[in-house]
Amino acid sequence: MIYYFIFVSFLFGAIIGSFTNCFVWRLHENETLWDRSYCPKCRKLIAWFDNIPVLSFLFLRGRGRCCGKKISWQYPLVEFSTACLFALSFYLLAKNLLGEASLSDNLYLIADNKFILSLIKDWLIIFALTTIFIYDLRWYLIPDKVALPAALLIFLLNIFLGYNWLTLLICAIIGGGFFLLQFLVSQGKWVGGGDIRLGILLGFATGRYDELILAILLTYFIGSIIGVGLVIFGKKDWSSKVPLGVFLAPALLITLFWGQRIIGWYTGMF
Image (cartoon, rainbow, N blue to C red; front, side):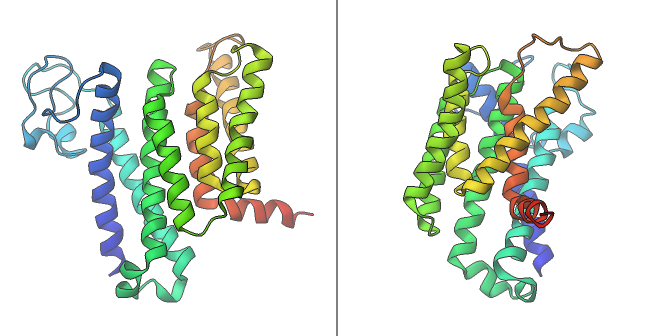
């Protein structure tokens, strides 16, 4: 029965991924979310059967039904990756919070308040990070309309989950302050103002000093690998700007899912 819940999480994640694609575009275009979906190429409304996550892209062979123009691979990739992350989040939470013996105890699983709140928090983090990842990758900008409300909601959810409010605030100050210091030293050349707000979100999302440090280290580790790779293959030069949110998003997700294991492995070496 546990696989049923994982499958439902996967489907729900695919729907949220589809919404994320729409949300990112309309946020950038400053449009309302309440209107029906339309093709960004020809602006014609999209029928419901052409708006099924991943499947519609495959059935239409990556082209719009009305205009025949190519649909960006961003759409199915975001839908599928969000679906996988939602399913993975459900499985890991069920395993970590309830233990191996409770994985088949479905009535207890869906009734456990801590599990439900933790799942909502994880899914909110995944949605916010996916949105920030896409937006920062495409337009080199971290939208405050996403980062700040997400940070506040994550803070409140962590309070309900029993986190110490002072520790959360200190983590947020450290996270935001780390990028603020870089912003001041470089006069805005190394990081942008949006990265400071993203640091605050990072602090609230981790809620632990060790995981906050790990997430920051992973951010620059991932960034250095990808940055050097882009320079080697001639896609960037050493003075080119790179979007920090693109590296911070996977770093925070890795910390969210496997942070304590990584920390335990590292400290066990000594």
